[in-house]
Length: 129
Ligand SMILES: [Zn+2]
Image (cartoon, rainbow, N blue to C red; front, side):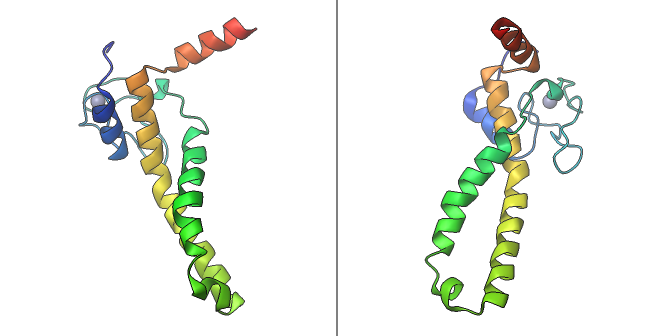
């Protein structure tokens, strides 16, 4: 498949955990493991090397949109430490782990739109040497 999907199409399909090319097949075979090939259209989904990108964006999102607002809740500062710390950290872990596959799907969808494949990454690395 040589044609890349439109940005919004690929991004939204990735957000939903679907193949960025057809939107039908699942992108993940488990929590964060990408399917070797789309079950619907057969496109190789492993050629999009997301690497650490989804983790960085998840940290960025959670750090700015969740942690900062939490710090404005008086209970976090005034409540008993033995309660607030485990509750807050548990909530942050829940939000982070819930957001990670969504961000990874969107990241891979964006890579599909940009046609950033592992072949190009290897070629770029070889050019640098
Ligand atoms: Zn597909």
